[in-house]
Length: 206
Image (cartoon, rainbow, N blue to C red; front, side, top):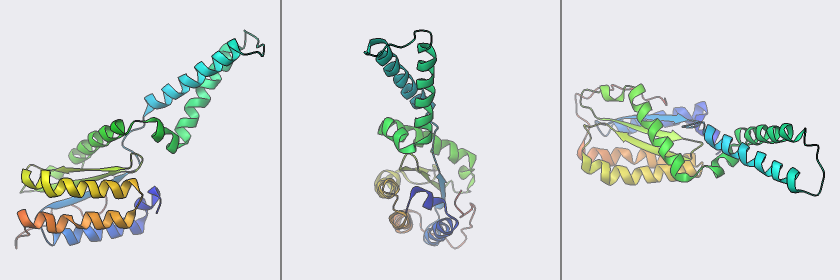
């Protein structure tokens, strides 16, 4: 499945079913948010455009072909614009030019913003857990609320995050669902579902 497959209606319905299955086992409230990208990486486009402009200038200035000096600035500007447009229109190129650490950092920042925007901290037991999927960045971030024990966060949840991230990196939707489903057994050991638990957060993909 391609990256877009994560956003198809049928995929969202299947993800919601997995979330409901998880919450039948644990009092943790899971929210899955899938985004096309965590950031636009304008700096990357600007840098590539500038590099294209510099290469164009060097070729025109030092190359054997004689160019009209009056049009060189226009040609350089055109190379800059075309370079920016190329990066903006080819996600694979933009991803290749963006260091993995930067993509990871942007995804983490966007996940924390989504956690606040989706009101995940509003559960009565502060047991919300955001699974944030950034498709362009090809990674996933788990953001737990403070009611989830730290031992669970640094242990089982960290391992599951790696599995989810690998599935997203490979555009493996089935692997993503399988890794997501592991949250049920993992969370139920520390926070088992109680008889009076209510579904406080929406199960649908945000």
